[in-house]
Length: 600
Image (cartoon, rainbow, N blue to C red; front, side):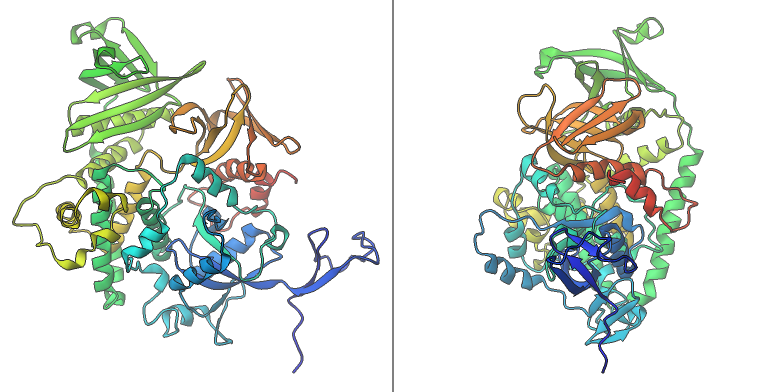
């Protein structure tokens, strides 16, 4: 039989270039007689580790730009909005010298599915092409009778897996992992990715557009998995009460996943309708609510000095109007001139909450000329806290309480707190059974602190708050709770700032840049994208300079990380902020390259 060479192309090793313009002469490419050219297939195998930590062999085009390759992979996996995902190199563990050992370990988690060829619309099963739908929904090895294995969360089978992967990380360690993001504007081959290499497919930009249970079963599940592992492996910090809430949601999701894999097809439609109804109910109740423009607060304490001694606290009567907090010495003086006034635009808002201890504090870092002022607000109770917290979050983005999202934010905060309540009503608590496996539901640190039985009891107690949820709703709630954590969505990189002595961190989020202390993670200063005029990269000295409308420009040197990675994060978030609901699914790929490639 004649061999099909259509997938082959010429690769110029020395210049790291594909010769894809077949109408060009070699001379036009500048190729001399002594050049070594490789005639090789463009599609090669990759071992992708999905967010659920399972590996899958996928055939990917090594000559496409990574942005396009990821789009094709996501199409195959039925994940909408592929622009939010990308490929990350596996961080090498410095302690492991032997490469062989690592490879042996990986096979435990291998998910043997048919071979996937993105873009071509064909899935290979034992070498014969299948239509994509039969592979997902038929009796192929991948689906094992389930509608799609990628939409189903599999419980962690043994605590050993968790212990093996668990390495508490400093912010510097996290920054090192982020050096591994691939360049979206260049091909895999140009970035020295080898055939059969393991790459991690991850949600890279933490800005999830139009997450909809109706169309996004796989996307929601993989996001849930990425957030679950981030919490279990302590890649993101949370309080003990939050950890128990996440554990209870996981326990619930595991339970329902096992039940629903038996009768999956019958209830998924019904379930989605229920979630839709619940979400629209929520919107109706909120629309009807009255919006406060002014919030009085009788006792708010307030601290100027960095050292938090009680002496530093002063008690004020405070009101919140538009995006400004005014502090008065007493309620009676609230009509006069305030003792202090703070504009919250651009501030950093962090919760400091302990529900069982009835502590509801809000920490504000308010931008001033030379950095940030630290201010603490103390609320008496949950409801008051929810209103103030929501108002602070909106004000930091320059929005007031009249904004339609205010009531939704208040509700989200209240439901997040409610899920952490411990309400031991003995008649509702399930008896502790052996199938809880607490050591697979909380991060390993808690196993040293408490006995398994104690953890199980707390998980079951917290489970009461979520026991009524449907499977997809529980996953959505888990993702929302993850998004509520103070550290959510900050990607850290090592940086040297002008005038700064030692290495610090630059944190990049969907709407701002944060200069951070590498040891403590405290914000030193923040800059909003909405205030940004332009940014430039000096590739020679690895320096990024950002210019703003009404404040001095910011310059930092990328330490250890390729400037391109940092540049792409900034441009990528700006690209994502241009997406609109009424757009069709097509993406302006060229616009993405313009904003992120820096060489166009």
